[in-house]
Amino acid sequence: MADLNILEGEMTGWRRDLHAHPEFGFEEMRASAFVAAKLREFGLEVAENVGGTGVVGTLKRGIGNRAIALRADMDALRITEQGTAGYRSKNPGVMHACGHDGHTAMLLGAAKLLAEQGGFDGTVRFIFQPAEEWGKGALAMLDDGLMERFPFEEIYGLHNMPGLPIGHFETRPGPIMSAEDNFEIVLAGVGGHAARPHAGNEVLVAACALVTNLQTIVSRRLSPADIAVVSVTELITDGTRNALPGLARILGDARSFRPEVSAEIEKQMRVIAEGTALAHNVSAAVNYTREFVPLVNDERLVEEAFAAARTVFELDHIATAREPMTGSEDFARFLANVPGCFVFLGNGNSAPLHNPNYDFNDAGLIYGVGFHAAIVRQRLPVA
Ligand SMILES: [Zn+2]
Ligand SMILES: [Zn+2]
Image 1 (cartoon, rainbow, N blue to C red):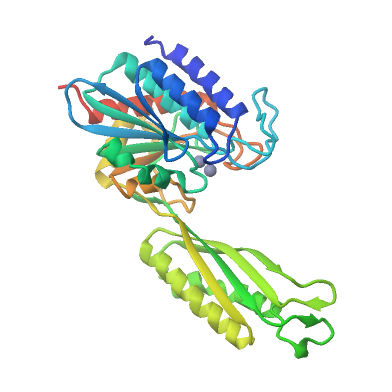
Image 2: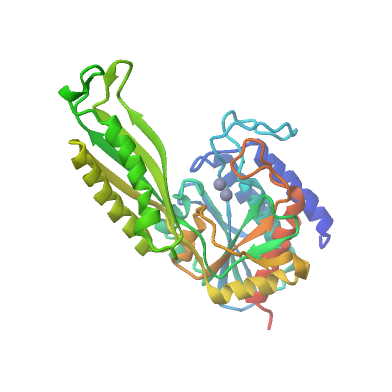
């Protein structure tokens, strides 16, 4: 093959086919069958149904006993696509709005290139994970024995980034994406007639006070040096016209970069919820869950990623991301087991991620393949 133009055309075809057939997390039946068939066609050893719909391809060359992993995500979102491309979603209400179709096509392209051209000595694991958006797919693969059945010593992943020009590369050492926690606070009192609030213990005024008081966690309880977000996203009551609510649910989302900060947010939330409820003579129950762990890049392997990038990208298109992002990424679960690095590749001026008009930019495919192949050849060098 050797001709990158041919590979680019093939990847574009795969990407658009995946885009037209998006599947929600753990339902990636068609995508995982597509991936497995391609990997077999390229001559890889293939394991399917790893952690549900996950696929692992293994490629060995030479005599080296080191192994590294490259990872892509396959799932789509419950969003109705508004774009008008000929390959727009054929599955109503489901859409590749995060570019995982592009990530999958890039990693397939890298598997094909490395299978045909080699240039490395050791083992490469190609990991196609399900359910990234849920924050559940990586753990499902790990719980299914990923590290024991397909061992590797380090792992690399990438995500496209709207707003960053095509052909640009960014990452940073240490924390780069946040943990995500979810919370639900239920306030219970006694509802009643809107005309006689004093006769019960309605919960809406207490809920409004609590939403306001929760704003003080970040502004008054955490160190200004710690980045964190506490967002209340829903306030739902059982009140109606002329009836005061006896039940209110407050739901929301918290982001942080260190487990100690996540623990402090939960602790302060419980104190504030109980105190506010007491002041309003109602009760509060807090349910606090941890959905994503923080994504922390290995300092040394970030340097390796930058070195690989310098063989693929123009030098002035490579940058250190200035600050961590408060979005979350399931790749973090792999990094909790082995060191590695997560990087961002430009998607040009597309709509934002998770927007109904978003589309992965096919001009970025070749850069993803270039980075994957470069990091493999650099980390598993031929003696
Ligand atoms: Zn996403
Ligand atoms: Zn994504």
